[in-house]
Image (cartoon, rainbow, N blue to C red; front, side, top):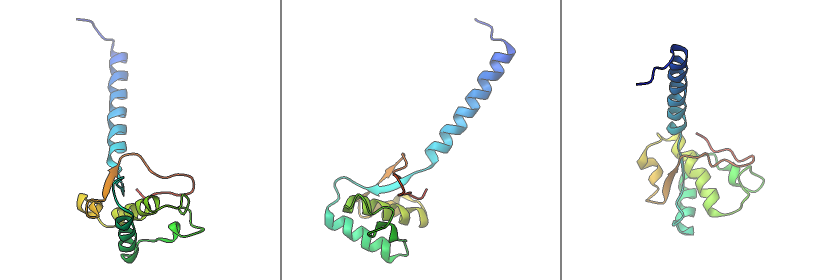
Length: 116
């Protein structure tokens, strides 16, 4: 059996601890976005629902930071995530009648910042 020097063992333990903590932090953030199979009618219904529940929908309006690209999937994903982040962050909250799914990678782009 190979012997490991004390400084090397200490370094290994410290780096392992840092990596474990980093992985935990990275995996604890999730975003709720629209599924690829959601229809335009479902996406519009999700937008209407989230906006009627107090979600700030100004970013998806013309001149808003998330208006471009101007399509229902992106607009719905933004408001669905806003609703998810402000209403308990549960699986049920992101369901949106099976049209929502989770992303482990931040979907923000440019000036369009998704809450986390």
